[in-house]
Length: 300
Image (cartoon, rainbow, N blue to C red; front, side, top):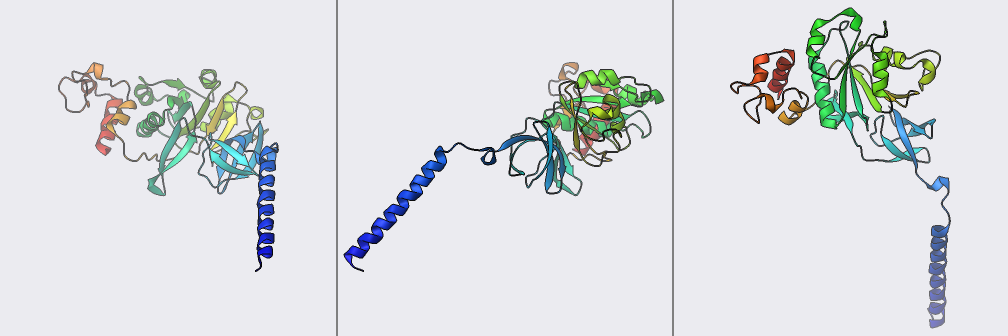
């Protein structure tokens, strides 16, 4: 190749680099359109490979390859979730199919409403305690909702005596307005055993016109976690009923956090475990909460 030809190719490469640089600078200086921006959204439902999000009040089904949960704050671009914001709080359990894997049920929630029936199905204190531990672990404030209070149930009432509790009956309406007031302006999750009446409580809290789904038909048994909005500003995630709630390894500190009434001030020892220490006031009471505590300690 002659010197003249080399110079010609050099000039051509220089011109190409200059044109690419000019295009790059022009693209950076050009105002971004909505197609180039990530849109903030709130996850309100999750399915295989997709999730339902709320964007400025509009519901949209988008693709999702990131593990998300109702309540997650995400970014959406081109009908696909591109990122998830750090979670402030979370409610999690072990995956029933893989006890070594954790599954997030709901994210960024303020309240966990643990729904338990006085009867039909029978009250299960062990499941309530597991929810309390999960709430403490995830930084969520728990509230026990004893449903079907019109059926009696002294054992459940005695167990819940020292817990934050709301007594409800969707048949008589007892406790519904109190519960509505507690949930106002917050993001809450309803959780509990199958058949305890979570959907009935949600129907009592808001008629069909106030919910995001089931308009004119009411809400039925929940098969997947969904988020609903009420007129008083409450946002409620309704989760499917479960029969077991796995936690994985539980520390003594996490267990104590689920039993706040067993404070060290009631015992002789500052780090009292309430098991074998002499003169422990908690041991002397030997109530239903204490017996449940011992069962959980035995599982550690």
